[in-house]
Image (tube, rainbow over all chains, first blue to last red; front, side, top):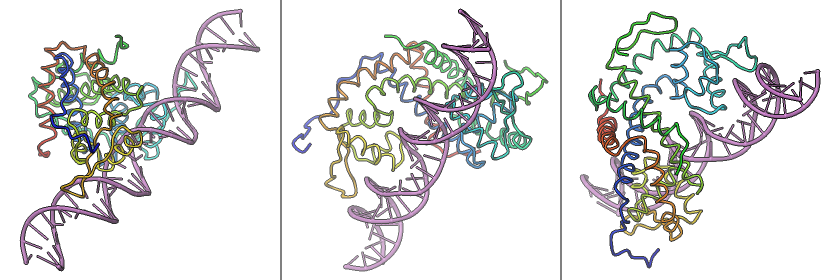
Length: 163
Length: 163
DNA sequence: CCTTAATATCTCAGTAGTGAGAAGTTTAAT
DNA sequence: ATTAAACTTCTCACTACTGAGATATTAAGG
């Protein structure tokens, strides 16, 4: 601590360039996702919705009633999370559970009419907020980025890591 | 996948294609970041470090002692967060606070020798985990993605939103 | 049937932070 | 010096979940 007067730069040896390239991508990926996410979330707080809550409403809005497990896998929350989130939406009258006739363990989540109406009202401005948040890239660039990120995400999510 | 009009059951009217392009990018960006983040985090749990904790250690490891405010801005946590996180690292003997001679409000965070040793041990495998997580793209593709995401992130973080 | 395993949801204690406001300090202007 | 404004860190109540285990149901095999 006190005695350690570093007389030189505290730089370590730089990693090899393949790793350096990956590290750089990691940083910009994290920052871009964060910046975009914050802008999009700002368009939801006015309606008192978290990103996960909105994601559920959006899934139900575009696909109709879904089993809780399917919603869970689609929006990537934990089992406890989907129960909690659907509870919150149900308490607000935006969504409801429905029985599954063929499997009594399972439940559907579905929008109520109020939930439908809310989504019809706010989805367009949400989409517009995303379009605006992405406006740092041209549409062509957005498509390039989409292709690259899809490939990256599938490779990272899919195969288990190996040495 | 450009303009297919499917007048069908729970399908809503599709957004214009500029918005559709942005929405698609939003989805793949979120998913890629999540998949990558989970893989990288898996390389940290073995050392009982969260991503934010590691980010602090990494900043101090590569830059030497930093004012708490600078660390906060660098790793993008709240003011309460940086206090909390440095407390945790200090309790584990990995980091410590130091007085700032020129400003008695401020504190430096710095690695202890134990923190230095830990980073020297785990940083290489962390970098390798990132390289591995990014291996779905070639290095050329990684550089393209980095350029696009940097542009996207800067545009999204920088200017305040305007319609 | 009965047993065992697999699956779907729920419960609830725990986690990793956030954010508003407080306290102490510095700066600039009076 | 005095005041006010701006800054830096800290406190703490709160949030939005996670994840392990519980409960209920279904599926497969003997």
